[in-house]
Image 1 (cartoon, rainbow, N blue to C red):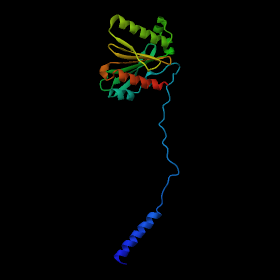
Image 2 (image 1 turned 180 degrees about the vertical axis):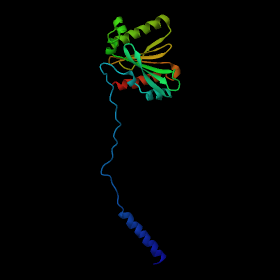
Image 3 (image 1 turned 135 degrees about the vertical axis):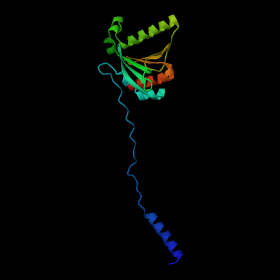
Image 4 (image 1 turned 90 degrees about the vertical axis):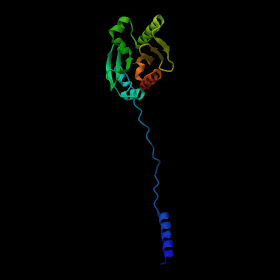
Amino acid sequence: MTYRSIILFAILCMTVCASCSVKVVPSSTPTVAPPATPEPLRLINGVIDACLLLTPEEVETIVGYKVASEGVDAPGRTGCKYISVINKDDVVLQVYAATDTTIRGDRFSQRLGVDTATEDYELAKFGQLRFEKNTGLIKVEDIDNLGDQAYMSEGGTLDIHILNNDIYYEFHTIVIYNIGLDELIKLAQIALQKMQ
């Protein structure tokens, strides 16, 4: 065989092998399962654990540093505080949730004649509006598109108060912890979505 014959034979072999190759064709197109949507939070015996409304990781994405959560005893409500892991004296955020059950179990609320979370929300707003009018030391403004009713108050702290589906939520912070009004609203929206 000459050199030219060897090259033609090699080209012929490659052409034949290429046409005989086995092609694998999937029998069906693979599907990607959608991520699991967490179950909405529910009241248990008329109460919601405030620490379930926001995870430390959700707060961390807003403030930009590590926090840990810890339950708080609060009259007429459940509470949770988020503490800086670096400086354990820094309470970055506090969240509270009042339901008709927690209000009715609170002696102080009963003495005031408050029987529901809605009444507690309305009393708190009335008190803050009155304090704003009489002293000018705080600012109170309604917030749209956040629950059934919502308002913010700003004085020594920045607070959002929300009434949604007969649950009264409170979110409290101090602006020095990287949580302004926009960030506090984002955290409130995350919490409210879990209660849908």
